[in-house]
Amino acid sequence: MLTAAGAAILPPTTLAASRTAWWIEARFGMFIHWGVHTVIARDIWNMEHEAIPSEEYKELGKKFRPPAGCARTWARLAREAGQKYMVLTTKNHDGYCLFNTKTTDFCATKQACGRDLVAEFVEAARAEGRRVGFYFSMMDWIHPDGIKCAVDEGARRRFVDYIHTQVHEICSNYGKIDILWWDGPWPLNAAGWEADKLQKRIRTLQPDMIINDRGAVDGDFWTSEQKIEPDKQGRPWETCMTINGAWGYMAADENWKSPEAIIGNLTTCARDGGNFILNIGPESDGSVPVGSVRVLQQVGQWMSKYGETIYGSELCKVTRSNYVNFTRKGNTLYLHVTRWIGPVITLSRFTSRVKSARWLHDGTPVRFEQTQQKDPREPSIGFPLYRVKFTGLPAAAPDMMPVIAAEFESEPVQDLKFPRWAQK
Image (cartoon, rainbow, N blue to C red; front, side):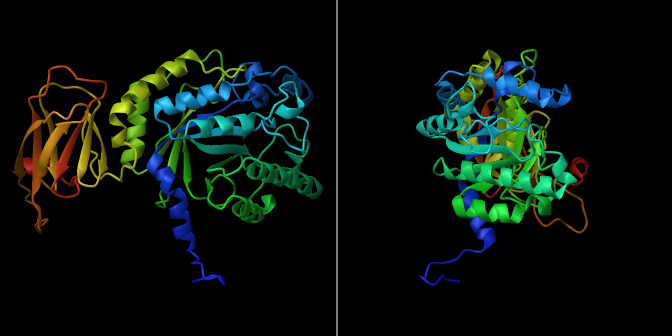
């Protein structure tokens, strides 16, 4: 189909695929939950959990004065960690806007901060070559109509206009934005939010921006929170996780995930065809907690050696091992050794043969031997299965979660049906 000017009109599915192509290639992002909640250092949910009255909570706006430059620190850390895109909470559930808005005085530019923190974030992320994303909560604990809108039409009209205006502002005032990360559609449904109307406005303002599925309508990708779970409908998907236990800064929470755990989660997401966005919660002054920095730096050191196993990886049909995780590009299977068991690593039930193998960190060849496995299933499965032993490995792991790259004759696939039969 062509427009009147002769330009091709792509169907919706093709448009979505073209928008998400860079994001799927990137695989790894940084999430940043930040705002006035950091003043009392008890996580982003403290207003709700502690039932803090709105007028009392608004006093935090007078105390939130982060110095300029903190966003540059986040962007450098993201680059060093190998995170290709960054998503900032422009407005969380507590209603405080990090951007300049005409809708409320409870925003960074009109409170003690006196600056547009979203503008600083965008500039910093772009300076480090990171893609830019905006988180935006549709619900709002501060706004007087934020709950009444569910039962009062006048309140709904006021509140929907309020939210639509804010979304228009963040989609209009910062140049090209790569991601809109919706959250919190409670308490209205798609019709109540006039979500289709809002989506059309967003697409007009930011035609190339990708949008997640939490805005009361289907977006370009599906969102899983704190667990790795591919979309059952086969859509592009992303898992978001905290680096410790809290989304926003909580002084009492130093339960940092280990670098190995984070790399393992990232690898599993990539193996199953998804993205992984890892959250940090900067302190009130914008500084990143030391524990977060330490972990991300170690992740970055690993990514500098093994990032090729993550970026641009494809859905992998090899999953079975107690001590190896996997990612894939074409016919190359990457063996992420998560538990070091000694001089031999054995994998089984491949439908094609291994041609070569090497350590990814230095290119040294890895010896291997493979045997064809018998399978008495009737009728015959129609193809041989192979058991592969990678041999001559060192007694101790040569690196944190080292990777072996194995080149197969065709796409590596494991046949996981009736594995015990092969031993009879």
